Structures are given as C-alpha cells and as structure tokens.
Amino acid sequence: MSITAEASPRSRDVSLDVAKGVGIVLVVIGHAWRGLDTAGMIGNAWLFHLVDRLIYNFHMPLFFLLSGMTFQAWALRRPVGEAALSRVTRLLWPLVLWTYLFTAARLAAGDAANTQVAGLESLFFLPLPPRDHFWFLWALFLQHLAVLALIRFVTGPLSAPVWAGLAVLALLTSSFAPVGLNAWTFGAATYAGAFLAGLALGQTHWTPQGPTAFILAAAVFVGLQALSFWIPQSLITVQLLGIALSLCALAMIQVLSRGTPKGMLRLLATLGVYSMGIYLAHTIFSAGTRAILARVTPDLTAHMILGTLAGIIGPLILYAVIRRVGRPSWIGF
Image 1 (cartoon, rainbow, N blue to C red):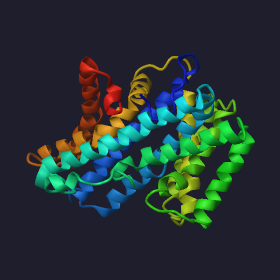
Image 2: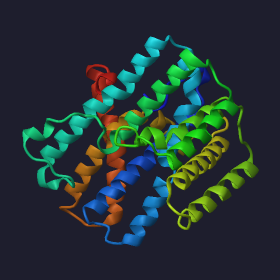
Image 3: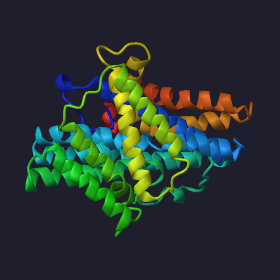
C-alpha cells in the first residue's frame, strides 16, 4: 500500500515507512499551501515562496530515493511478467482511475474549484500524458519498467558504484542534454538521478546512528535549505539539492527510528504504509475543506491545519470503507 516497491515483512525497514510518512505529510501540506495561494488567500508572496521552497526542495526527490532503495531486491524476487504487471496495477491503474475521479470532483465542485471545468465533455480526455499530481505515478512507472528490463534482461543485479555512476549520468544528461524532455518524460528523466541514487544506497549498509550523525545531518540539511535561496534554480542544482536534502532527511529519520518507533514516529510509519491512498485522494479532501471553510473564515492557520488533517484523514476513512465492501486495490490504494 506504499508508493515504493513493496518489501517483504521480514526485511521491512521501519525507518523507510517513517520517511514515507514524513514525505506524504509534506505532500499534503504543500498542495494545501499551493491551493490557498491559487485561491488568493495567502496574500504574502514572500511567505508563500519561503514555505513552498522549503517543502518542494526535497519532498518529491525523497520519494524517488526511497523507491529506488528497495526496488532491485523487490524486482529480483519475482518473475519478470509478474513484476511488470504489478507496476501496471499499482501505478498505472491508480493514475488512470484517479485522473478521472479528480476531474469529476472538479466538475462537481463548480465555481468552488480553483481550476474549474464544466460539462460532461470535460471528462472526455486521455489520462496520458499525466495531469496534476499524478505525474509522479507515471514517472515512477517508466523508471521501474526501465530498471526492471535492465537488471532482468541485460546486466543482472548491479552494485552500488554502478548505480551511483548511472545516477551521475542521468543527472548530467537531463540537465545539459535535455533531449526529448516533454510532458511524457520530464518527471521520469529529471528525477532519475534521485531514483538511481536510491538504488545505489539500497545496495549499501548505510546506517547512520547516534547524536553526532543526527546533528551533522541536521546542520547540513538546514545549511542546504538556506543555500537554496541563493543558488541559481537550474535543472542540475535543483536535482543535486533534492538528492542531498533527501539523504540528510533520511539520515535524521534513521537515527530517530532506532528500535521500535513510538509516538509520533509510529504515527508517521503508519501514514507511510498508507501513503499511496493518501497521495491519490488527499487533494479532493483538502480542496473540499478549503471551499467549505472559506465560507466561514479566511484565517490562514485554520485553513492549513484543517485542510492538512482532511487530506490525511479523509483518504484513511475512504480506505476503511472500501476495505469493508471489497479490496482497496480496486481503487488503487
């Protein structure tokens, strides 16, 4: 039920679930924040760009990194056909279904939607190239199929140095020779560096631990976030920054997740397990909450808190309801 490739229960690293939990919370916050800006409710350009930059610097690279960490082991344990089919059912099917559900929700919302659509003819479109936040599923789908074909038909399993070399090659190619980058390939190509870096990391025994590692990772994380406001926003700098920040965030999470996570870490791990469902459905619940709450108050804090909670809790309730009558996988959860 997670966005990344499924790990076996015995080998599951809880810190990766915690990291996915952190990532999905940031996804919900980021989309709620951008939704308020699109609705003209923030009114402070400096504040908007500050929060937006701090979140979008790394939260999506983090997901690609995490997916890469477990993918080679997952892909090698299954027949090629089974692995490929699972990418269709776990990534492509949710993309198609929720693209139409999301558009239908906009149609039903009418004037309350930030991006308005009208008439049933608005549902007559192809789901690819991907729309809205579903670009992530398409990018991951292409990356998974490419790596699956590589390690099953060409090279066999690859070592950490080879994956790292491929990550560097992907970074340079997408940044300085962006041939063929378009709506179909942009996401997969520009996040290939993060995905391949995750594949490299997954072949190592990188296990930061202790307060020194946490403090160092936190210091580098804060420094890089501050630096991001000064360096040029080019393809290469954005990609490198995203990977570096993701590694720092993961290091801090791994230090905190030693032993059995409790309290907030346990909650984040649970959200990480259900991250796919939250990713697919959160915007509908957050946007609906914003539309209703706007009739009551323009208070930004109330909108962010309630919109974020709705974007997290709403999909979890939907999951529980679907589970009572069928299988959550029917709707891509």
